[in-house]
Length: 266
Ligand code: GUN
Image (cartoon, rainbow, N blue to C red; front, side, top):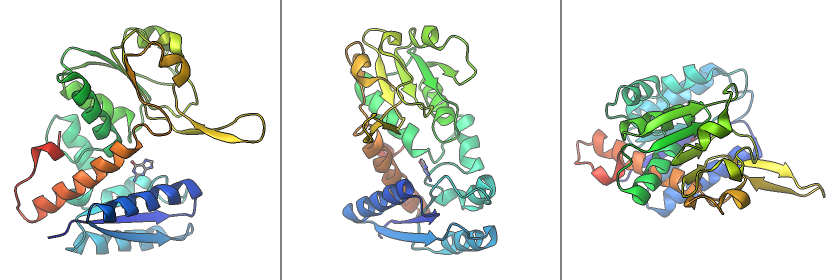
């Protein structure tokens, strides 16, 4: 039995193409089947839903990932909720989001799942730690907060309208930055010894026409104060893909009533 992952890309945005290619390559590298579906940016919702339906019923496909963001004319919620929740390896389906929010076993969104794995590896138990999540997206901020809460952290979610972000961050043992603002978190905000996970990935102009990738945290300043910190690039990305592959293996085991590895879920 070989687990199979289908990745659907609608649009020809270069960054998304790089992500999708990397996911496909690593899926094959670990010995699983990868099915890539590239659709033009003007694809109708009916056409996309027909493809999802076909993948839902394909027994060789155990996981389905629709790369976000979708073109404006497509309704992300309608598309994501059309995926069979058992094959929703991104954990974005409303059933999986609801299961996580109520503390039940769910398919977990890959980036927060990867962050949680790293934090557990670092701390052992997260119980009682103060965690601040910066950003409230459905992809990272909200599920990250739910997962930290489930591991008994005291969780604060801050966002663009929060008034005293530096003060709140300075009380955190764990900071997860996922707001998509380059170098937003300053070194002096960090509590000495805190753990900082930077989920941001932003391309900025250096001034000489050259661009570079930076995170949401001022890494150079923060690394002098933090006890542990993830860089950008080269930080959480590999963990996200590892968790995507883990979710695909879990979905395959469930589809065939095989025993699951607890190592692959939270
Ligand atoms: N776009 C940015 N991050 C993600 C992700 O984790 N999954 C999908 N499907 N699209 C994304």
